[in-house]
Length: 438
Image (cartoon, rainbow, N blue to C red; front, side, top):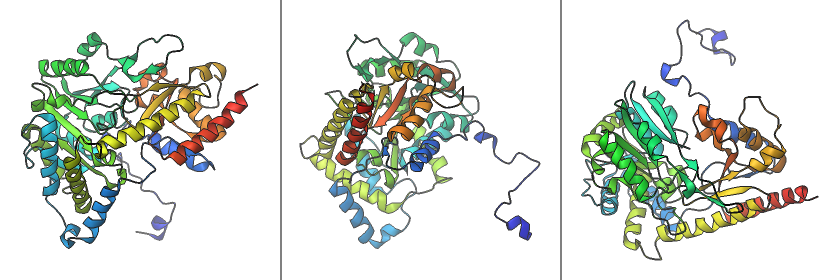
């Protein structure tokens, strides 16, 4: 290699296309864009990305410390498909919830976060030309993961029902049209992607809604990939139901979970997927030829945390009881604060997130700076970061391109935040409210 080629400005150029075709159409990442915008402004309150800014439970931290300082063999590889104590406790814990005898060797795979579980599932099951049904709004990785596997995303939208004037909207009002949903299934449909509680909407799908999806999946011989990372964060008496627990669904369902969302440790990147061996054996093939094995100490800490929760399950001392109570208080705090400046939150039934209707601002400030074809919510968030010191995520990124214009009057906030962050938000909003007052 010549000196010129080693210079900082040198780039490889080839007559052949350099990037793989699987990267076409997925190079834009909204998280990078909006995180960069937030970092460029001084004194902003980041309510955009979905991670807690408070300490995990003490028992989880102690479990990780013990994993690092205890058995020195935890510094080495563990079994490819999961640290045995973790796969064993996941099988025991979720077997009871799903009503299944789960084999830790055949029905459990530990992955690099839920993201890793999803990617492995798409790569294992979706082939060139397969159709994958995705409910909008959707967690934004589902579409690119479908495309990277060679599949074709097919979208069906949750649509809000009208509310009485002055009545707050709720995520439970956002419904699938059964006829439209049924029309999306064809002979080419390979997989259906379910996310409950839903990110970004916070909708918790009811048993009736899940039974409709289950019936269609069975009728058309379709695999269901269900992302249930927020299953413990359900509010107001609503109940999380795993679709794999419905009759006839275990055999065709992959259930994805996350230690990051379960124990407020998103940086540990420990996830898992549960399912029948007929599906899981294909995920294991992908896993062993890509990741091979995940960090042992993180898995050990998650195993110990689940063992603790199994002892306390259903009791007031359970983290799965205490944590949603705390997060619901954070949610209610944020709702009240946002309403004070004329924003109209859609009250979520679960998850870390709520979306807020900005229609009134769209009517009053339609000409915010930005490209002519840029959805309004993206321009609004950029304006809000720069002028109000508040970071949110535009809702349109959670929709397919043809549908973005119908939902560009919503933005998403994360309320899984420390009390000090919420107080800082209050100060920003009160200042905003004062500016709005004549």
